[in-house]
Image (cartoon, rainbow, N blue to C red; front, side):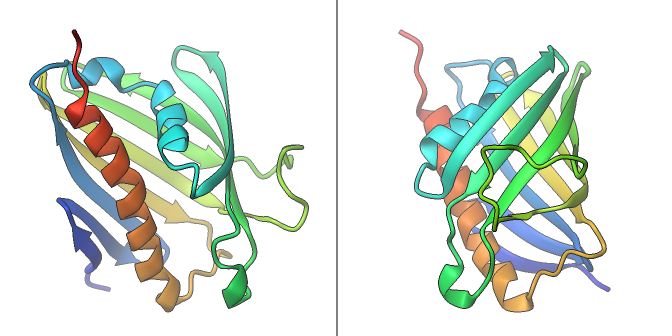
Length: 183
């Protein structure tokens, strides 16, 4: 399959690479801060705080400076379409080099977190890799590559809706970071 842009707006591009393989690209720039210094596990908390109309709950447990467990429960956004509420439960490992920060995560299938509604469904990912390329100390290019488990069904009409939701989430985070000032 040739890759297909599903949604493009505000400098964010959401692409379907292949069946169950997606990529999200965007950049952030702020000449007032060193962006690489704020790219850590706390970014997940920021995403949640800025998008409480999309997420019902967020739980981040740091194992150490380079590993964490995250549980994100989405609000039941597609209930009217007959789709179940979704949640993510994943283990993240962070790697830092001179010019990159990489977050690799995989879904945790073995246990269902207590904070997750019983009728919700895991967004099962084989792999989720976020590559943060540090172009300058003030500019970072982000590339999220997601591969869902084989059994995960994503109806084509939902793909564009996912792009719209992702744009909303990351536009808020991007605006927050790009407008951040240290006094």
